[in-house]
Image 1 (cartoon, rainbow, N blue to C red):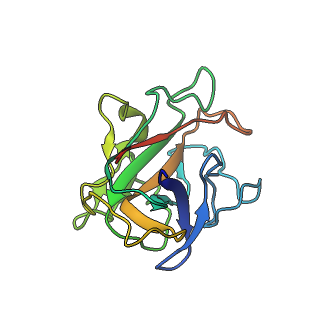
Image 2: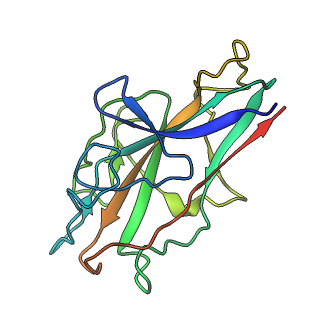
Image 3: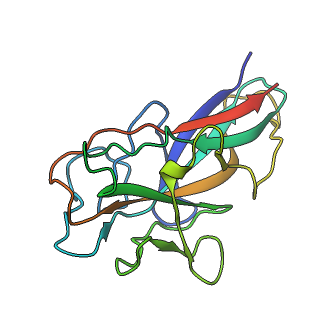
Amino acid sequence: MAATVLIREYNGAAPGTPTDKTSGTVRFKNADDASVDLANPLVVPAAGQEYSYEKFLRLSASGDYTQISNLVLYTDGAPGFIAGSPTEVDVFYAVTGSYRAPAIPDEGSDPPQSDLVGSPVENMSNLFAAVSGSPIDMDGINTGPFTPTSPTADQQEIGDFVALVMQVKPGATAGITNAETITFGYDEI
């Protein structure tokens, strides 16, 4: 039997409430919740930039497997939220070993900054720079290989958290953006 690996979004105060987003949608907005709705939308700013609340994602595994290792995350390298204006709506990331309640980054900073990787605050990285040939390491802090404590249906958290933030700039077109896909990869034996 193979492992069942889920992508979970975490919201709220630590330790966070997980919501299964495997094959689902993560909605960036001005609220810390996992709801996929049109409430609390990001607004196209007149100047500067607007940021969403952070979206924390982490993998979890269950099933009868020996080990899971080499967790990565990547994109197709081409932001396409708004056709013809790929730089007006973008996503940035930071990887962390632990969860804290999501926040909105300081909107005076471009790119967004995060305190997730320690002090001082550091710039977040552009998510679309992570491609299959150069993915984000998702088990660099909470290192694998990950093994089940016993064959069980219970989900076990594995790897690191990635915090994602959407950035909207003044040239963006108002309305619902196109969907984008991120891919998680791992080795299993």
